[in-house]
Amino acid sequence: MVFAVSVDNRTTICGLITSKPTNLSAAMHNAGYAHLGLNFAYIPFAVNDCGRAIAGMRALNIRGLSVSIPHKQEVMAHLDSIDPVAVKIGAVNTVVNDNGFLKGYNSDWLGATEALKEVCTLNNKKVVVFGAGGAARAIVYGLKQYDCAVTILNRTVEKARLLADEFGMAYGDSMAAVRDDYDIFINATSVGSADECPIDPEALRTGKIVMDIVTVPMETALLRCAKAKGCTAVPGWRMLLHQALPQFELFTGQKAPLKVMDEALLAAIRESE
Ligand code: ATR
Image (cartoon, rainbow, N blue to C red):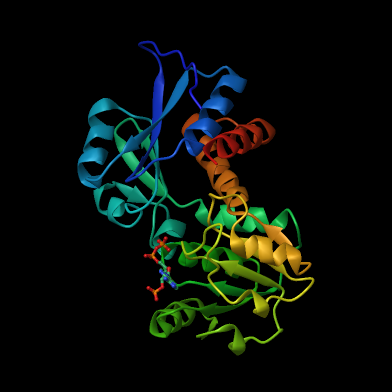
């Protein structure tokens, strides 16, 4: 999707740094700016050298950056301050530039919890998180805020154990560890496509909530199997939307127009598929 963003010498620039940017974040943020009549523009930057990109942010006075794979950890070394929540999670997905002072935040945990809260009350739920990488860390942090009992499953069980110990949660190596005793299953790995499922779908049970962090395709094999089994499916793009709203507010100081950004994201995903 190409936006007719008009730019002049007063335009405030924001953007995304990641190795392979898509159009999805730009679609959301630019639609929000247009809706509110803000003289802002959001540009996806394909970045391999995170440190030089942040130096560029300072030099060009870029107001805000979303940070995605693979820079969420490395970016922390280049900032002036980091929000304590992002320190706890160990990753930054948002950088705000206040007159040359760069502060990092993490809104991924809000993305996950707000996406789940669209379909359930999250407090005290029993949740299985598959994965123990950066995305899983943000999700486990978020679930802890709602007093959820989390079991972390991971291919490398030692990483699941370390993450579980850090957040006071349980761990295991397969769905056999939890049997049917869970409310929500979350795929927090990037494993997943239209054909590939991160777990044996036979392990899913009717009535459970199943969330996938994979954004494209909209309906992964995991979500398709979940629906076929009578589960409630929460697609990854709901999380992408909800992590973008706090970013928008940090960048602009204005409340993010949820409906407009939601529709823009959906249109951009449909276009990309
Ligand atoms: P991210 O920041 O996106 O979470 P990451 O930190 O590299 O990325 O973590 C990737 C996660 O996906 C890990 O949990 C990883 O499992 P391992 O710890 O065993 O490596 C998981 N993962 C990656 N490829 C996988 C695969 N083919 N099967 C199962 N899990 C996989």
